[in-house]
Length: 424
Image 1 (cartoon, helix red, strand yellow):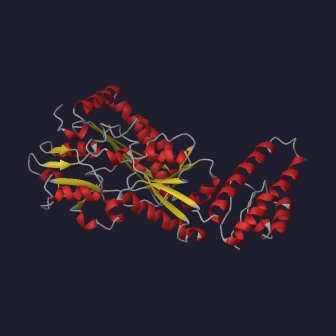
Image 2 (tube, rainbow, N blue to C red):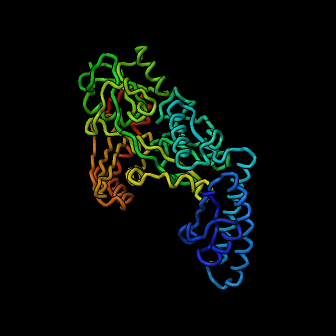
Image 3 (tube, rainbow, N blue to C red):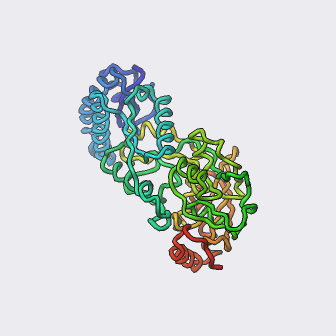
């Protein structure tokens, strides 16, 4: 079989000998010394060989016994035992006809489209994940999905679409979660990480109107714009303070149905979501960044996994798209430095150019759009987190702490997007 499980403290004679005992190719064929990860596959032959390899850990441990004076020896053995348990769990699950990976997701049509895309990508990269049932999709209802009558700012901001998924991950009901990264808080549940991001989709917003109007400036006074996003609200009011933004939540299909029924005169959606569901024909016009700067992490799908679950991480990490990861890391650092959530009108987008340079545009506004602070930063993509943090601190200094305090008080006073702001 071309697939195998191998857990070794290093290359050389011990690894070669153990490979020979299990019938696997020479260790040199597998590359580098042990780095804390597993190389694996789960064909029938591989599962049998994997069990033999776990048994061979005893041989490896014995050889390590003679080197107990080395400082690395004990932690290494502990790590090997931990990963042996993970291997055994994965092998046993597959042998019993259970899924190799359990994927947690929200149940909205867009979330499910992203989950099935994830399943397709995994199957293409790992043959053992291609058979039906190898990757199981488990839908989990979140608070954000259940409380549609209340604006995001009123019921707690970010985390509304991830809390129940976090619980499932911590309780090992799922092996990893698939997220729209813009919904993920900047502070994750301890012991977990965003390990992988797929290539980013077009991150721009679209305007949707039944009468073909393509600019917010052209909407008549009193027009109702359906949006639960303070980011969108603030940028709309900045160019047309005579319209009224009202709470407008639900999945893509629900929002389009409400628009068609005449509940509002206009709404906005992320272009990425429409593309993933093959519904781009509903967009009246795509909005450029200088018209409507997108949300932090918009258009990026990410995977969240337990940091010590190497049996799952070995499948997820190879799928990571570096440029997307760097750009989103920068944006999330920008958001974190501003203590941003759904109660804060914050926007930001970063891109990594062909020469490895990262370029960030950030924006913070009052909910009424009357005060807007912008920032641009560039630097090496390897410094993504620092670039984002420094940009956020620059805006904090320019705006002053009182601006952020007043903004939070104001948001609570007007119940976020449910009323038109009147404060200057």
